[in-house]
Image (cartoon, rainbow, N blue to C red; front, top):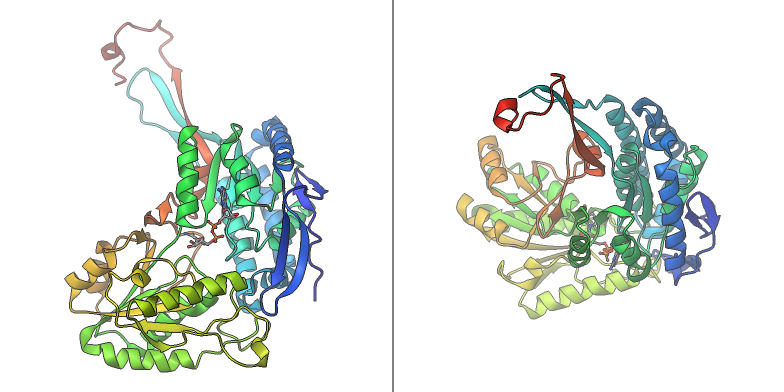
Length: 497
Ligand code: NAD
């Protein structure tokens, strides 16, 4: 198909071999090795930071007019679009996701760069309301050096969601992808290089979280870390950021509820609940992993859901019919299997799945069947902890108050789905649930123009939307005296309080 990136790192515009720990990228559909190469060491990171500092401080970049800087974002978007098939292939090889999904992710990454180019060109600065003898303004400036740390599940999309607004804002970016999925981020670097972005403004540094990740968080020249990943990693990173009073944005884990009322369109709800939890083989932060079904329709709904789930096409990521592909890595598949084992010990009934699929075509691949569990209370660990795999736990509920209480009785607060024919009820439920996103009669739909983020242990800060660019900028206020008079000794005289 397409050649995979060799594994040289993109250190401030130069392709260099890494000198850090070895990284092995595998194709999890059959376990074959994609590439083995050395990731970034501390020294590689220090070099990238030093060069990024020089590139970012260059007035040619820092003070570039918005419509000029936007041209780079549009060129990167064009480059991604022109290479969609290649990016999709590389990402499917790296993560085991279906080609259908990775092609969509590549397209969305192009859209993200284009969107933030447009936001940059059209964002106004504010002339603030005058309250004294000065003309007052609020303007935005780049932060400086931004570290973007991303997980393995949707690398091209999460990379774009950070790199695009951070570059648009006039920063230099140091991107650290996860070790299980380093290749597509290196491909993004190639496209950025071709788009002509000045050297030093982007580095792509795959490598160990302990080594290069820690360096990026702790280094005094890094002005912000934008992190997507697990809650425990995010928490440890936020503690280090607090030491140097550095802003962080955290997109973390979830255990999102999907709620089916007895007045829902059952066919639409069955399809949506399945898509919400089993697409991407459940490796999705927003996976609707806790299903609450109103007691009056519980048995009927679960029966339909289980038979439809059994009919899902589990297969190779390159097969067009495949709906549920392999997982990212055999180690991750094993951790999902351990969760199901734990649930069984907690008393859960396995309604379907709960094992690896059998047959030659799954040989050597990190496959696990879509699994539905029932008969555990909302207090069970399987209802509280993120599995990050194709595992759904079903629970009944009685009424609105009951389902709000059960949904919110969880440390996470990322997303929720509501299935009902009554829009006023959907509104009430959506407003009452602790979550950053609410889907009504649909699930897992995204738009770059709509902010995304979590509450509680699911994170802080928002990505996407027009304000997404502001998360990578510092706000500055200006006062221009209009009086020509010496400063008076009392604020009261200026009336500017
Ligand atoms: P992870 O936390 O293990 O790793 C995420 C990134 O952090 C990787 O690049 C990793 O190398 C790096 N890292 C690890 N230790 C570090 C350290 N000490 N300092 C700095 N960086 C470090 O997460 P993962 O297993 O790659 O991804 C799965 C998790 O990501 C799940 O919990 C999922 O819910 C979450 N996720 C959240 C969102 C969201 O938008 N909320 C989106 C996708 C994934």
